[in-house]
Image 1 (tube, helix red, strand yellow):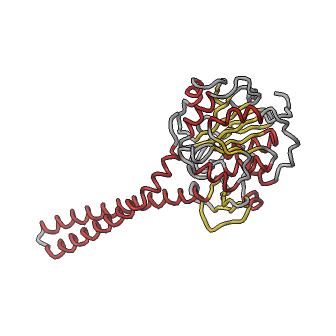
Image 2 (cartoon, one colour; image 1 turned 60 degrees about the horizontal axis):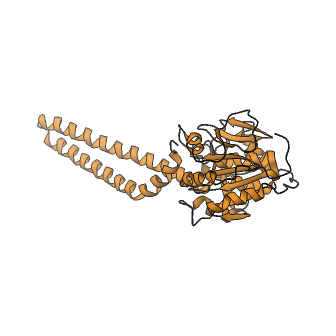
Image 3 (cartoon, rainbow, N blue to C red; image 1 turned 90 degrees about the vertical axis):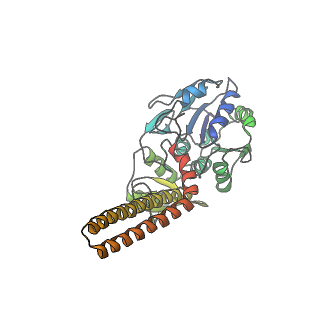
Amino acid sequence: MPRASTRDIIVIGGSAGAFETLRLLLASLPPDLPAALFVVLHIGETSYLPSILEKRSVLPVVPAESGVAFERGKIYVGVPGVHLLLHDDHILLRRGPRENFARPAVDSLFRSAAVSLGSRAIGVVLSGSLSDGTAGLRAIKRCGGLAIVQQPEEAMVPVMPLSALRHVDVDHVCRVEEMAPLFARLTRQPAGRSPEVPVDVRLEAAIAAQELADMRVDDALGNISPFTCPECRGALWTIDDGSMLRFRCHVGHAFTADAVLLGQGEEIERLLGSLQRGHQERAALARRMATLERAEKRHTLADRLESRAQEYEEDAQLIMQLMRRGLGGVAGATKKKKGTAV
């Protein structure tokens, strides 16, 4: 694909609630759109997304393949288990560290487009939970590209669009029916000169591409924090990224602050579940021991064991109540991160 002077690269990211929006958008695109489109939705271990989108899309939709030179007029969709990255005019698929528990991740795609394609890139954030896409959209802007966000009032889950609007100098906020004509207009505009890529954006793009990951890189990106990585339990570094609070560990796992909260909630839920099970097992064992002691006429010891069993059961009930109070927020946010088989 020859080097272009127009904004011919459109990268689109979404999560919860973005699937139907994306179907409507692809169905309304002009057939002569002079751009290549790249899509990442947070998906599960199995995905039929390209074939599903193909049925409604005006343009051909294909699963991304590593090493392929991309073409205008095609839509490339991220596949499970690998980041969809752009390098010059080729696609790269890499098993780099997950970002916000996702791979493929929206931010990784956006950041790679910013580094390699600069002002040619247009980033689009659709419906979704947490703050996915915000850091990548900010990278696109810093490298001369444009930022588009779905109107939050229209989005099924408006958290991703709202986060982007809060932290990024967005160029356009629009409803889904307004996006196709906007794409047609923007992709025919001169891209302009791309500024020099900021060092931090280049470093984070290299981490996703598995070209770089160690503590010296983290020191270059920010300062060590008192928090631990929800994925590998290593130390987290705070990344300086405008008004947005973000973190990375030395393995390369990346998180926004709300994703760290999600991870901490899941870990607490896991520990509470283990603690509840432990108390229930202690109660069952104490009652069995009490039965044996009573059979041997040692009633005083049997009474003590039954009393302990009662205490263990009460502790298990208390833990269960704690889990019920906190389960709604944790489980609701977790559902998005599990991905769906589309």
